[in-house]
Length: 250
Ligand SMILES: [Zn+2]
Image (cartoon, rainbow, N blue to C red):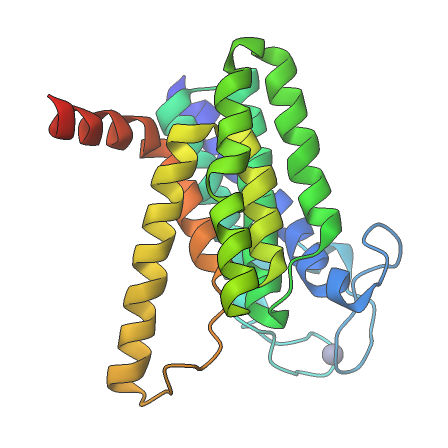
């Protein structure tokens, strides 16, 4: 049964991923996410339903528009695949429960936030509202996690807010993101996720400076790293936190 459920979830994740592509593309342009059919960005031809199958259509079309032959970015099938694997990851760790469905929805929203931040250096309030609603719903289903959720919402966002005021280096978007995401994740997972995000962001900064001769001040969006860190922490966070605490105090 796990293989059947896993396969169905992967397919479900791929389909959601193709919707996430639309959100990532249209939200920064303030276009409607729900209305208006998908069309080729070059020739504007409406894309036929049979050419909208996640990943498969891209492969069948050889990564080109059926009408005008313009290359379609590899990013679209990659995001669909990633979306599928994000769901599989949650399923592998937590099985199929109401809470894991909330975690999958949370992962999808992180994927959208990370990609839009990467593209535009901006975090959109609409995506933060989705996370906030998911956090509230998660709290309703498990009210005992209330103290952890409140602390999670404050533990990173408050220091980030202070750093943002002092340095002007961190965007307000990251502060709000860590507020609502921390509220969803609870204190342990939030701390581990932020730590992982800072680690990866810092490493990436060093790589850019060493190998690409970028200036230290070059703007790197920090949000995507936080999102990756939070997803990893969503799966491993509690174990990492307990291991670390045991290591310090054990
Ligand atoms: Zn075209």
